[in-house]
Length: 475
Image 1 (cartoon, rainbow, N blue to C red):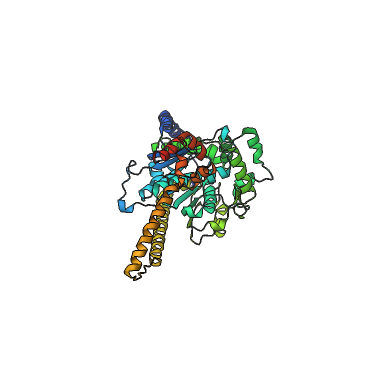
Image 2: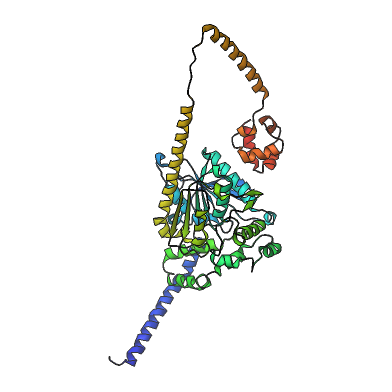
């Protein structure tokens, strides 16, 4: 082996230093432009309409045609999908950009897509409980989607904490859910929930310490906690990757979108946070089938509809082990598990999941829609078979006497009907939830409904004044 030449080594070092300095200079020259790029990126661009509002909540209905998505009429699905996101962060992670939008993948497959945007609670909302979120907000959104689509049962896709709440809702209202999708959902915490379960253990942490201090749980506290689960990557490595790719405009745009979402957190309603931590994480009540919400038992045997679980193999927030065991304790005999080599957020934004996972998820929902259609057709056929017609041959005298009796009976029935008021639930837009609230206030009939103005009805039914006005316009 030839001895090292000190002069050559010095020249090589000088050359490499000059190349590095040149590269740094080039990167520095584009830095102002790239910073402007990061600040100007757009997110959540798929067009949508707000079709229902309650408190801070907005129910979005996505418009495929306005998004430039052309789906043949025969390929459009009649049973819609309602996406239920977590109470933490903003839901546009599911519509981050055109190429990485779960919303667009569903629309492109012909699905009718709705999404709940919880928005940020105020101090006035700190006493909202899981009962409020599940049995009030989600229930009302399901009513709205059901009314708009004409479907008694709809599809649900719940993400993260939204998946947990979706499972709870489905157990309490199985007849309203055609198929249930659970995406990175925390469902079983028996030393299976990773770092978050350990940090949230009642041995070390009392969630009421936070809510007694702040009321609601500050988004900044949650953001720091999540970042500290992988501090090297979140505080060092990702910025090194940014510096190394500063000249790549596409990389910088993607980085900017993710940073915008990560920094756009929302506070969490205090009581709901405490209840979720204590009942779901610390006591594992949901998985053990002893959870109660609003005094009602959440019976997992009632989750008898088709279920699909989507999990990230490298999810450090909700490891697969915190989701998989749930499949064994629910009542459904149609359970599908799709585990993909990505993380918690990667399930929604990774380019590989949009190529290899979401087309299969779209097809899964389509297949369950076909099964529901077949079941409806079968039920209709059975009803028709049961409604046999018997023809009795009567004498003319008997026929005449029966005809007179029928006329008398019809006249009596008509008189009775004129005196019997029409139930409020016959008004379009008044589903079982609103009807129950109106009846509790003594409003049982359409006649009684007309005695109130829109503002009074909105307060009684816990809805918007515009919705109440729609009810009155039909009278």
